Image 1: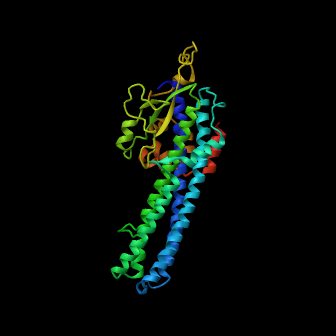
Image 2 (image 1 turned 60 degrees about the vertical axis):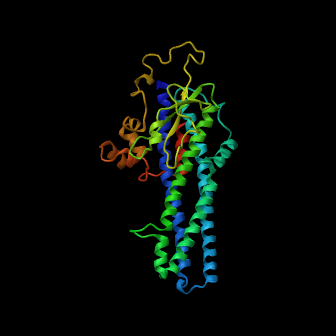
Image 3 (image 1 turned 120 degrees about the horizontal axis):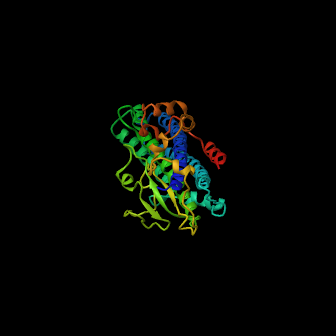
Length: 351
């Protein structure tokens, strides 16, 4: 990795940590929405003695439950759509800042606000829009809720036993436990999807100075085999492998649910730009940078205590510096969440 590209990678990794903090906050918001839905469903179940329900009364209850579930998942979809638009805007800004760090001007190559908003709305996760995934989750929860209630009645369970099968217990996950887990996963994946889409669009808009992209994977015990294999692989802006890469681009990350990998740009050399000067003169600030391959772990270890405290929160920064918590324990950022407004403010301040 050249010094210029390493400067850019450092900036993008910094923003990626901010995105993980945003994801932690957004997942918490989604969980709260699911929990409010759970309270309404519990209230429906406890309103009458379920064991005395006939078919017509049961169907009415399930219809009411479907309405409740649909309403809350519409709220989840709307909230997530707003987050994705904000992430797309912030990601374009952070990409601009990253390239400005090596004196690459992007003023003429930024996608329009309308294009960015459309990009957020059209982001695909495994071939489907986020809104479709929320719709699928809504249908799944409604089906599992109805099935759980019917099975409980067939087995002669009390209302409280059926409620526990819906809400879950310490010993057994319930319908709502699965709903919370799936919602958190969708929030995290949608944020990463739109972020990488926005990066790639910005890089392509500046093909006069950017020749390709490289994947940087978060390497810890949670990293999948596919992202371990893809770490450091490179492609041109048309998705064709370059260098020693043989793996297909396949749209880039996220490559699976929960993927935390990022794309960083590969800038053209001065020679490729037709400029006959040394790439970096002796004494340039970039020549002092450390390892040739930048990872999130290396980036964190290169930060000052003050910088780590700002990024992670002072307590978590100290624990990480002292080796008391690992990158695996750090990456979800649940101890130092970031709202969308705070994310956009950080990008605006650092441009």
